[in-house]
Length: 251
Image (tube, rainbow, N blue to C red):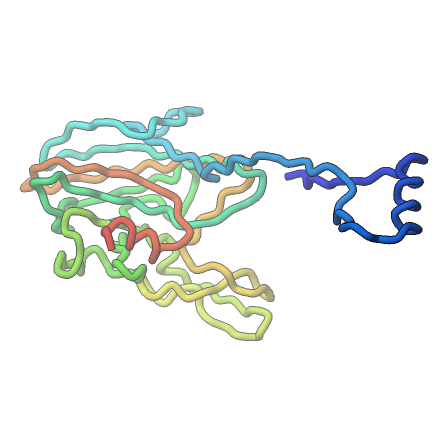
């Protein structure tokens, strides 16, 4: 963003006025500025635009903010999400999915028997991810979806994180010569790490988008045959899991 600078450009008349003020006896207050004050109104929008549509990836399709999908217990239901970086620089954050039950329904954590993932590019992360889904607890920490209990949580809503790096064996050394592994297991604490010889500002499963880049991810959940109800699935890009979870769980 261009910085707005106020410049006073000297002219013969202006120089005469300044000289008279300096030479005279200051019997009145002297203003502390000698120019006008230009202003700019700035509207700041969310840096990432999210979209969603039913089915597998369609090239160049942005998706809508919401859609209605009909499914029966036992159905596999693919849907695709898009995330576009609208900023002119690289940004990073967590890609989270929120599943909310209707007013008369509850979330048990057993709604799905399978969840497959396609990053729509060659990736070792493609495939079955049910065991890599973590419930983001109300304090921002993680637990495996398989271990989820509704006790102590809003049991009408689940905030989920795909721990795509949870089985990584990488490690980093920061500028303070501290070494930690990038991962200590699926849904384990999100220890800070980063590129070698940098100050750490990231954790695993921190998802990057380059300037103006769009990522397209396809998920295919398979509903448990015994499930019936009304559910809303939404995805967002967030940079503070604890604050986001507190907001979603109404804390």
